[in-house]
Length: 264
Ligand SMILES: O=C(CO)COP(=O)(O)O
Image 1: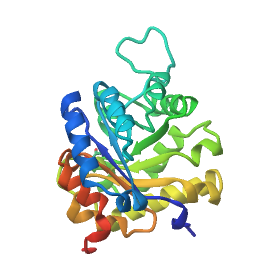
Image 2: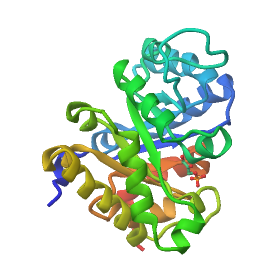
Image 3: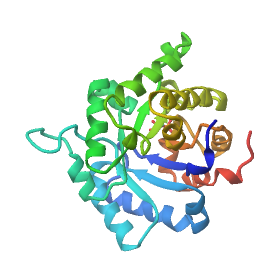
């Protein structure tokens, strides 16, 4: 049994490598102008920006007391030192980042991030008080072979190795089937529920039902205003990690307001 009442839905926009710091300010202002207290009461809203945008977004959010949360798209496993080009947990914490995306499929694919690296980054985020949004999900070959559940659960277990229950209960896990990212190919609500539900069952086995009930599990992959309600209707889907559609303020607001849409 899952306890949906304790999990506030999270709609997080992963901007990927889009929007410079000036565009980031304009875009965040647009979102803030469109969203109201009713939205924030029902849903937590976050933007996950390129590193170069974070200081600008922080200044805007602090100055205007916005309720939008923000975070980064990657973190170093190390807290300081000779790691040219990397950004550390203490740096993100200083910018008051609420979240950091870890193990996105694009980083696994283009930057060779394996389970060990992802695990180190999850630990670095918790060490510095930044909540990881851990991305997992299978490619098309795994899906075609019908192994999506086993594959994704192995990623979850690898990423959480040695992470204590009191941290795990705060984590956000995003199930993003790689074949549905940026392709317009959305997993059906049933596909999303199958894997999100299996992740929760495994968390209950690894930790406890109480921990599993607290973890928010998002779906990601071609989420739009028109399909968000159907995905959100599933009991183990607690939000969405939105790529392309998060760059369009009106569309992202439609996703935040998924409750207004008919479940198709
Ligand atoms: O990768 C994603 C979010 O992290 C999903 O991207 P799209 O919404 O563009 O498919």
